[in-house]
Amino acid sequence: MFHVKPKLPDWLPTYFDEYYLRWVLEEIPPERTKKQVEFILPFLPPPEEGPLLDAGCGIGRHSISLALKGYRVIGVDIVPQFIKKAQEEAQKNGVSCEFRLQDLRSLDDLEVFSAALFFWSSFGYFEDQENRDLLFRINGALKPGGLIFLDQENRDYIIKHFQGETWKDKKNCVILERNRFDPTSDLLITRKVYLSGGDRKEAERRLKLYPYTTISSFLADSGFKVEKTFGGYDGEPFNLESPRMMILARKGFPPGKV
Image (cartoon, rainbow, N blue to C red):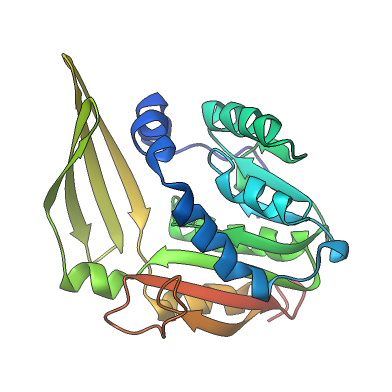
């Protein structure tokens, strides 16, 4: 576990910035958020069992939707402008959510949460040992029998249908996305180029795309038992043709005791 403040990856503040906020997060349709939240609701413990942790909460779209369902939600993110936007959106929607500007690697809550939710590829931004240690911290923060939900891009699907370059035409902005995948490190490197008016901005993301065997091993080592897997938000089975790899696991052991 970490005993000093963990260092942020150099790329992270430049990728998750005001461009990503404006042209990615704020462009997500409400219908997508609704579908993601409606999917997870049947698996969640009732609200009276304790707060939910929205890990990597971004601008709070899932936190707010869950709060409207009666849950107490604590959203944690590492990006100041995302937390500020989440607080503004919660106020607009008339809900009380707690949003923390915090690195999840320094999470020190003990047996507070009934569930920890990693929506839409919010896990995998650090080195292997750091990602594994993060799951230990999540285990410690969950109440006995607490749930963890991991929603990742499916590595095998990405490789099979790999797109090296894509263009996205937004209102007043065009986004060029260039991808590289390193199979020796499970690293998907995505470079976004934003073209808006006369402005040009480039930023790079480095995301670990772990296969199921690696993720399930990380979970087992940190005291979780996998209960269900899905390939998408329609509840379809997880397989090689699934765009996503979604895992529901239960805290069954104290961290480090497996």
